[in-house]
Length: 289
Ligand code: GLN
Image 1 (cartoon, helix red, strand yellow):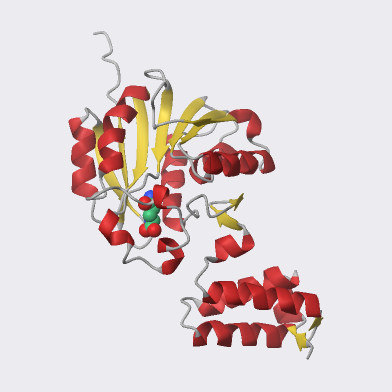
Image 2 (image 1 turned 180 degrees about the vertical axis):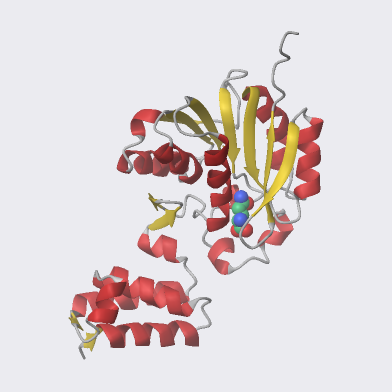
């Protein structure tokens, strides 16, 4: 039986709702748009447009995958972040809106025009680094990741955004092999979930997202213990860092960075008013009196 757009959308919503999928209204609309190649305006403005059997079949496939709790970003293979669109695979952490706090703050700290060298540790899809580079034409960036699969995704995203000429992507173990005092800004969204907690997360994360990007060890802080001294080492004097943290990690992570010699250490909140990003600086060189 043929369906029109309105029926497809209502049917999709009902199926997701019945299956207990969180956020069924928005997911239904997004999946109808993708499966049928239409926009939100088409669904509202031309609701009785018939959809072809191929599109209906594609929608059914998307809905079945979503009901198995596959994230929408994996079904579509892309996700919007800040003001860029990123390709996403199961090999990278799907970019999340709370991570935009890092981008927002970085852009405030480094106004346009100045040359800027950025390092993104655990670059994943490239979300943070590419979002900043897209807005700062004089900036150059290095993204490091231990996962070749992530680097391939980041490379393709950089190319699609026309940023490949200003970004280098390297496989590495955090800052191993990088020279001292090279960067004006270091950003990172490292794995910070305690190993035991991963089992309690939604299936979208627990089943479908890479452990490597989530698992922060027994207390969730393993990556920060390594990153604090390493970030201070590779920053130029006066350089800044911004790292994403879990909502309950503020004191522990601030203490690690202060212990490594960082100054002006503070924690920024996300839009849900959760502690989300620890920011700070490497001490500037003493100026001669
Ligand atoms: N914020 C992510 C989550 O809660 C975790 C990201 C991370 O470990 N860096 O799923």
